[in-house]
Image (spheres, rainbow, N blue to C red):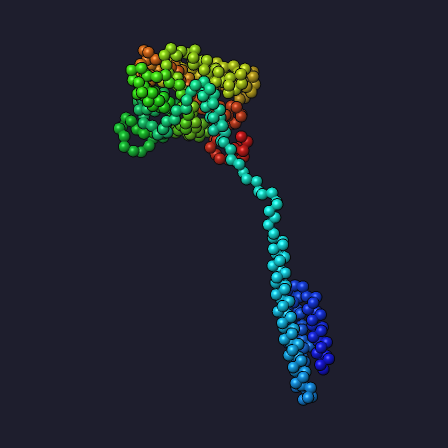
Length: 352
Ligand SMILES: [Zn+2]
């Protein structure tokens, strides 16, 4: 009987050697320590044994039971440690792997275009002058020679702002950057009212119009206004400056032309076109078969505007111009819809 117990123990320990996961360990426990295992059956048989044999067999069986239980516990711990090691191994952080690429931001296409325009005018001696987005009717219209009820206001439907103001002078989001002309001239003139210094500035900024949003027009857009005031400034200076600007922006061989136009704050007024760079002037869909692309409006500063700015029109003259950087970017990059600029669609923005 004792020999049989030794065999049971040996068989159990040998089987345990081969166990290498938790499921197999549980099966091992059932077959070697479970109720119907050979060892447990030995306990059942104790009663039928000879009295002299009983204590020795009982003692030995208990020893084996304790030995198997402690071996089981040890094996279980080993298996758990192995599982931890395995998971550490399989989920190891490999610091030598290249990291995920960081998406670099870049400048918005309009900002890129604006900076190029700033640079060209900076080289010609123009400084950037910034003014407010919220204006009074007086600055946005009246001082620029748009009296109340003037029909030219119809071109610039406006966003009005609730607040306290005189009835004929409501607050609005500026419809163009031109009110900055008055602010700038008054600031310059204040430094020496009897003999105001010359002005040579560009005024960039966002403008707002209450318009139907279409592929051609947005309710918000940038403008770059330019203003040069001084003694003996002529239409020739205007043409020379803007022709040079067009050559620097669109290429040194680009042709340009001026067409008569009307703006309340300039006289005479003109629109400037450049030869279509898509078709070379032959006529295409981009230039609507005309061979020319309109890029800006301009003119000699109206005497009323000069005197509203503190400059005596008998002594001073000047020219002004205004362009839409989005429109120019649309021409340069053949963008068909102005709404792309503010739609924040990465597929569009990533192309620049
Ligand atoms: Zn064309």
